[in-house]
Amino acid sequence: MTLIPLSPLLLSLKIASLATVAALLLGTPIAWILARGRFPGRAVLEAIVVVPLILPPTVTGYYLLLLIGRRGLLGRILEEGLNIGLVFTWKAAVLASTIAALPLFIKAAQGAFEGIDRRIEDAGRTFKPALVVLCTITFPLAWRGILAGAILAFARAMGEFGITLMIAGSIPGRTQTLALAIYDSVQANQPQEANAMSILATATVLLILVLVGRMTKVKY
Image 1 (cartoon, rainbow, N blue to C red):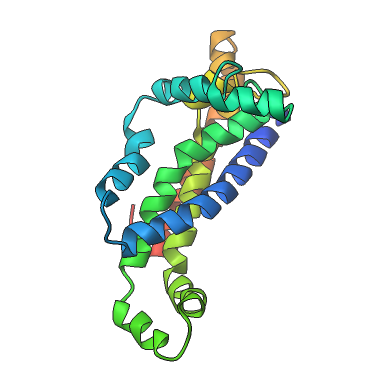
Image 2 (tube, rainbow, N blue to C red):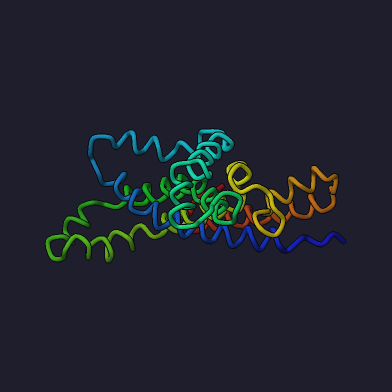
């Protein structure tokens, strides 16, 4: 019986969880703006949101490497000003997973916000401030879509490979996630270990999709 290395699995769970939280915090206001806002540049913002889904992951990773690398604008500021290095650390893996997962979360949350009858919100604003309406009416009505988006974001973060490889590498015990460990096992001609980890990854994704289907009443 082949034992699955725990380090890549635990690191993947940690990175995916942090990336999901980041996607929630960053994606929820963007999704609400796209669902409710009518402003110049909205189409451009919506296009930017889905770019990571369309571009090859290595291209996205390369752009991030140019940005947060030691010679990159943001990377140089962080390293020289705050003594924070991102490239080839688990923090870079979190950033990669967040970028990959964010579009899925935003589109799911945007659909949830757009599905709310705006007359309900308008009626609420006659008695309550807009922020109170957002917290007590809008979010409770959209929670299914937001939760489904968060679960999809977690699944995408768990499976992230290309962007992570570009900016975090595959360092055992430090940045080697489950997806990278599978790749490394194949490269090292260790098919039994690769099979075991692949089965685990597949079972996880299938379970997540079943949960999303039940929560949103969508059949896959």
